[in-house]
Length: 251
Image (cartoon, rainbow, N blue to C red; front, side, top):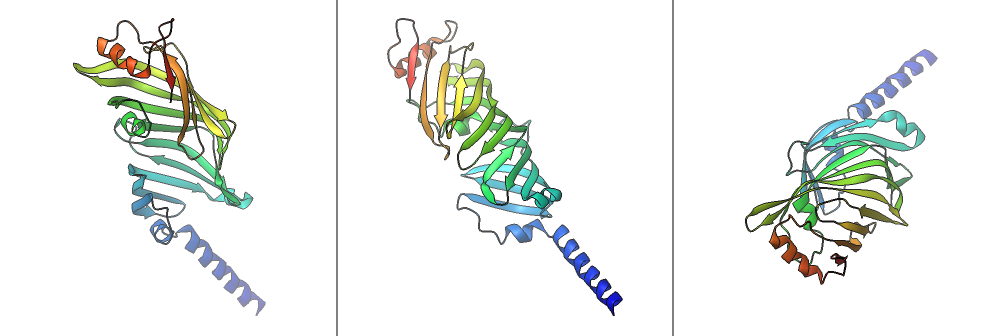
């Protein structure tokens, strides 16, 4: 009798194991209440290793998102997943790759060690309150060395780059070169610091709140003499230059 109960229990455990191991991701996501600004379509694979053809967040689509969950991390109360999405070769799309983890006891906390993200510049600048409209090109590359975030910035070390920066001019695109920013925590907020050398002579410190709205942007710039006259004329929208020729930035 005991032997039969043992086999029955083993059979039930095996059934539960395979049920969880091969649980379709589409069945889970279809029953989860997602935020109003998030939609997911064409999901395949399992909850442990799957793919979503399209994920849209705040109107921004990401194509071909894949994930691979580490089940052993669940034993210590962690949800650890490696994600990859988008096309790194397409400058007009969002792309990312790297590890992400969160605590099962605090889902607001997100941690990472070595995450790479590419963003189209025009999509990002559309969210920034600039004093005049800017039609810019290129890509933002974000390299996160360490991250611990949620609901506030706890630890952040990394860099953000503006690659192949261009701005539309009357005679065609104007090449502004490349820019690099250092990322860090400023108390509970995200700090972005840009320093020279660069073609705009730009030095800037920006603070982004935990809800990713801009808190402040301060700095100064002085365009290189070899940039077109229309760049120097547009700089006047930021006010009058100081005695050193630099224009102030205060947004």
